[in-house]
Image 1 (cartoon, one colour):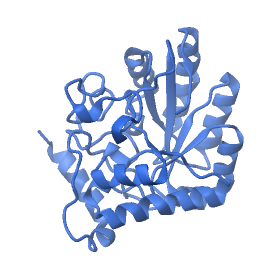
Image 2: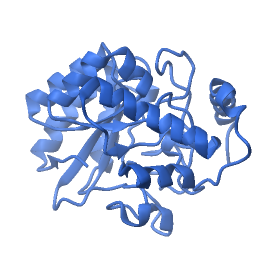
Image 3: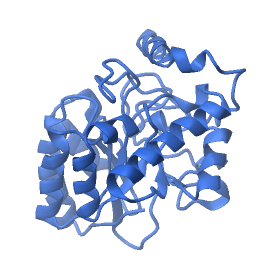
Length: 288
């Protein structure tokens, strides 16, 4: 059941993409089990109130576990429902999104969404360098265009840069033509800033549709989802972020965090504690 708050967030999100949606010819086929709503972000490419960062999907807004309360996910952990054929993660088989990494025992992945951000991305980079950890940064095209030097710094440090669309709109509501434009424009921005063409794509809100997955296949980008969402975007407190990650992380987990979309001081503080704890627990970080 969708709460009133979630509906309000949908209204705000729709308003943020109204101009683009006006050109849509009709509804797009949605992968319903994977598409869910995240709350509206505090920025995204400088647009206050435009689409929210990459965490919850189209959900209840109740804040459960790793999916922002999304249908098709375990409400306690946010992991894909085992009976859902669209959520059989562990690779890009049959064009499906990746929900887990398959790099052996204790392999996990850290993903950082919605940057680059002039304040928080450098702080995250310093933490990763300190602990010799490599992560995947899902970047919004508008943010890359605004902070190309930081995008280059991320690439130069050896991290993977993932396409996170141009404006962080919910692609499942867009026409196929608009989907392609959002994805391709972000790719162009990342290429111009870093000299690298992204080979990974993360859909805002985890909203996968046939058009999105088709474009991933056409461009050779791996569709990347996640399995652990500590809801850092909601600023639940450093201890809450840490506790969620430590409870839910296991071999193969893809952890979702954010360096953009608002004040990410809690995220940075939590990463400074949780990364060494995970390393001490025997985990090692891999990229997609």
